[in-house]
Structures are given as structure tokens and as C-alpha cells.
Image (cartoon, rainbow, N blue to C red):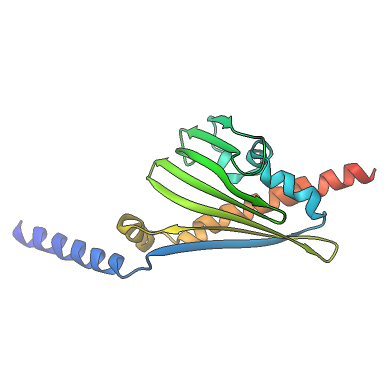
Length: 179
């Protein structure tokens, strides 16, 4: 019994040491090219109601959404509460200027944290180059979880899914306008 206890303590100590050596911050970023002008893409990101239609983190059903502030731009916000992966928290646009939208994501559950979300929309050849980044602090519990799960892979897949949905929505809107 003592041997088992000492072995468990040693494994825990090694895991904590490994976790403590991980970076104090994280950043996950994905990009996509959308064949639609910035003026067509930007409202899909900056308007909180429209953003929640393609945001992959809002696909958790049932998900209660409570919008506040202006529809879009600085101060637009959405409190959310889901029973699954989405958890509970608040998303708020903290800076909105042409081509760049910055949001603050404050999670209350399943884990308390605060992250920054940035969208950069750059006019490109025949459309818009979109960069979606999420970054924030990595407290010890997040560092420990990082030993078990690849944050870039897990969050990155969600960003890629969302960008694909944004692309489909923006390009379909362009096709409708052209018709």
C-alpha cells in the first residue's frame, strides 16, 4: 500500500513539474481565404447575432443566448449557457475597427478563464483573407491539461470549422447579391 502511494505521489510530482515548465500563455490561429469583399464578411463577424450563427462554439444545443449592447461593434455582447462543451460565459466585442475585431471571452464554466479573440480581415486577391486567433494565459491547471490534450489541435479544429462555415455563408451571400 505504501509503495502504491509513493508511486502515485511520484507520478503526480513529475506531472506537476512537467506542467509547470509549459508556456505561461497560449495562442491558436487559423486562416482562410473567402471569395467575398471585406464589406460582406465583416458584418458576419462584428454583429454578435450573426456571429453566433456560424460560431462553432455555439453549436452546443441547447444553448441559451442573451444579447446585450449594440448589435455590432464595440460593446456588442452575448452571455451564453450550454449544457455541454460550450459551457457558460460571456463574449464581448472590446474593439472594432475596419478590418479588425477583438473580443473578450470570459468563461465561468466548465473552467474559469479569460481569453482574447481576434479577427483580422485583409482585402486579398478576389476576396478577403481572414485570420482568427485566440490567445490567453495558461494557469497551472491549463498547463496540466496541455500534457493530456493538444490545445492547438483541439481549438484549431473548431476555428477551422467556424472559418469554413463563415466562408460558406459569406460566399453564398455574395452569390445571392450577384443573382
